[in-house]
Image (tube, rainbow, N blue to C red; front, side):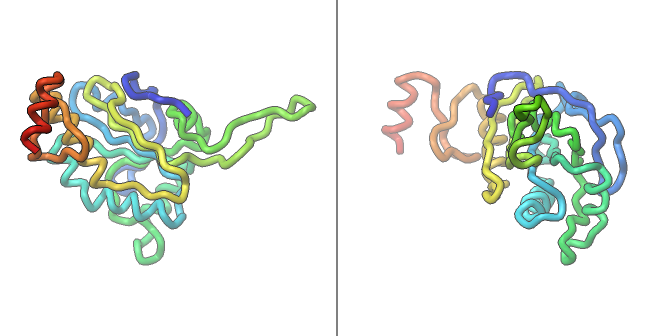
Amino acid sequence: MSVLVGKKAPKFNAVAVVNGGEMDENFSLEQFIGKKEVIFYFYPADFTFVCPTEIIAFQEKIAEFEKRNVAVVGCSTDSQFSHWKWLQTEQNDGGIKGVKYPLVADPSMSIAENYGVLAGEYDYNDDGEAFFNGAAVAYRGLFLIDKEGVVRHQVINDLPLGRSIDEAIRMVDALQFFEQNGEVCPADWKKGDTALEASFDGVAKYLSEK
């Protein structure tokens, strides 16, 4: 499992389904460099149970990300055709119709592997034959990437454990607050709370005012 915080986010070019049904044959996060932060998240598979709750929850709060100038991008090891079909399926039939942000297709599993979220790995048997050991899907990884393309936050959940979209928004707020004000964000900080100077005096002042 890779720790990417503080490092450049791995680059990729892949097919993505955008705007709920259009194929972008050469999608890349590079388009956001210098323009937007990115929430780039992985989910295990299309047409499953926990995954649509997360994907739809991101769409329901997409305005919160947009007003913060943040792009949301999802990715799984499914094909673009599977993404497209799922996006055309009504939500009450188990689909995710109405989701508009990009869903990246990673059937080669190379993007998931480069981000350190692949649930299995390639191995070799005694005869030297390659086989895949484990699940050929991604864990529930989420990466907050800044405008310079650097990963500033990551969290990786096991397959059964859904994520908090509000926590993703909180981390965006914390990063943007730090970048704008130079003050750091203490435990459970949320937008509107007092932050603190990155010094012992700053910590003492913050604790005395709580």
